Length: 143
Image (cartoon, rainbow, N blue to C red; front, side, top):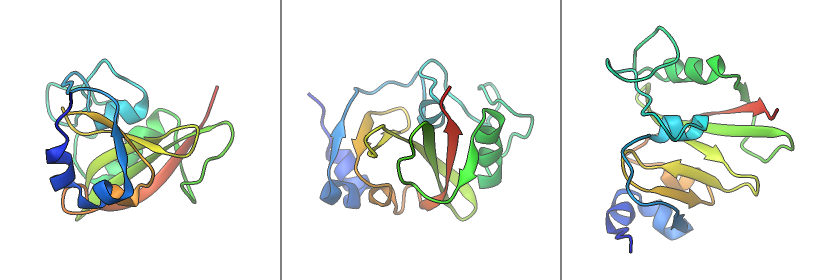
């Protein structure tokens, strides 16, 4: 059984909008890896971790560059588009904080740091003190 009290406290909008815990705590991968489709590696700009580009900074543009390096491009909205995978990047004061990926039915999936994976209906439900706000949405054509 999962104790989601910490999630409810950290993300009060999420509790109101509704979410489902879909995995137990797992510190092998984080939200960036999860959004990129990798459940085997922790992605971080910090030394000693996987980061697919040379710039190792925490600025939001750096994370955009990471997703561009794996085929994503910025897009206008967070609506489901046939044949595209989408990710959303959250930022606070110019620093990236989180990435979520869209599921086929339009809901979103997030890895909460080293903790649980969740599914949530809206991106806005994660906005707040922890992750800031949605900075942009990106998409990549499915192969």
